[in-house]
Image (cartoon, rainbow, N blue to C red):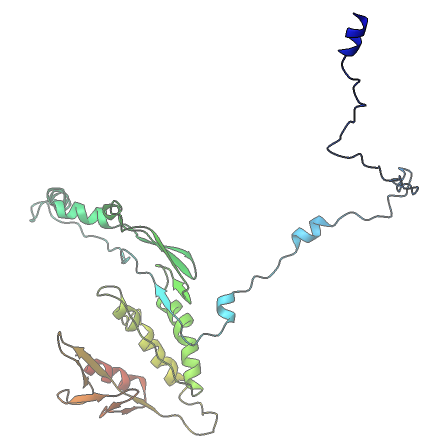
Length: 297
């Protein structure tokens, strides 16, 4: 039995070998240099001045306007028309009791309440354009159109200058026309065009009224105030006026007519000139305003 057990005994196990997936790494040698010690609390701190934060915050940096510094050959101005023109309040005289109509204020209010169109007008009198800064505006559609998908608030920017609704005629002239007139008096060519739909205020801006003149009367006054001055070459200045009208009919081409002539002959519009246009010499303000009045009839 002993022999059988010996013969069937399992073979001796070989020596086991442990395999590491990550071989051991040697640690880096510790440097002999010691780190710098923090300064002791006993060091003199009064030699280090305090950070001048108050002085830095009090410095006023001048803000330059990038729009005005860059020269532009084409400038676009926008003038916002007010919703209502403010007029002078006149005192109403006392009326007798038996004069028709009796108590007109109540009757007018009753008519406005009965008429639904007046209520619609009051609702529609809301400002749809807002001034963001002197160079951009925000256009918001009325409440009645805000439900549509296509109508949304838009921001329009890039204007040379935007005049608010409460600006005056002199503000528009000084910012928009005065630089153009100064270049014109120095011999440079210039052009000014007023664009906009009907009722946007073009006629008021260009011509104005006798009490509140527009850019044309103000420009003529400035020109004739400087008419006594001599040009850079030493010769006296002379001015000529031409007024023409361009009409375009539906389905037909444009036609130009001379408003200072007989008005019946058609002019030939070319690329940069108008052949046959009459040039009338002007010498004073009264004569020029009379010619413009005749042409506008």
